[in-house]
Amino acid sequence: MLSKSFTLIEVLVATFVITLGVAGGLVVVSQTTAFTQITSSRLTATYLAQEGIEIVKNIRDTNFLLIHRGLITEDQWAQGLTVCGGGCEADYNDLILTPFASRYLNIDAGFYQYSGSGVQTSFKRKITIFDLLDLDDPPDEIPDQAKVLVEVSWEERGRTHQVAAQENVYKWW
Image 1 (cartoon, rainbow, N blue to C red):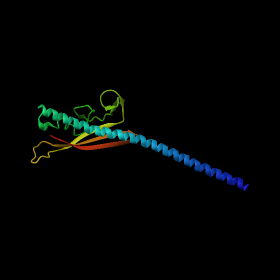
Image 2: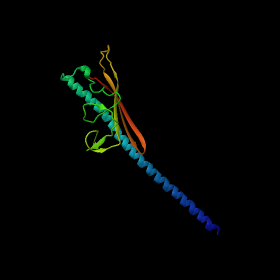
Image 3: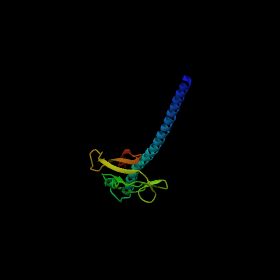
Image 4: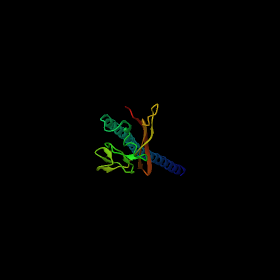
């Protein structure tokens, strides 16, 4: 009789150990899935932040072409970049920045944009331009550098996440 109850205790302990092992494996799989989703979103947000910086550079370069054609003066190289110190929005193909309205980006045919159709994403992009500096010696009252900060935020699994990228852009001619 003693050996039968000892066998029952062994079975209960073995069942408990196996249950713990399976439960631990399920927790690891669940956390890995969640981590993969957040990492994928973080990568997308990083690309959207870099695209925001490229939008600003594209506007600056377009201004350079306008200066070269004689349509604007050299001191207007930052035209359209200083209009929204409180933050701006722009699509990848825009030539102007518009005030930040905290809108979600849509995805359509692989492109993230505010305008047009598409499926709404959970991403918001805010472009802020600040610290315009005159680097000339002696100063000529025309800024030569601007700092660009792009913040991309999204909500996932009940938490707000954010990625930020910052770069200086220069009057390079």
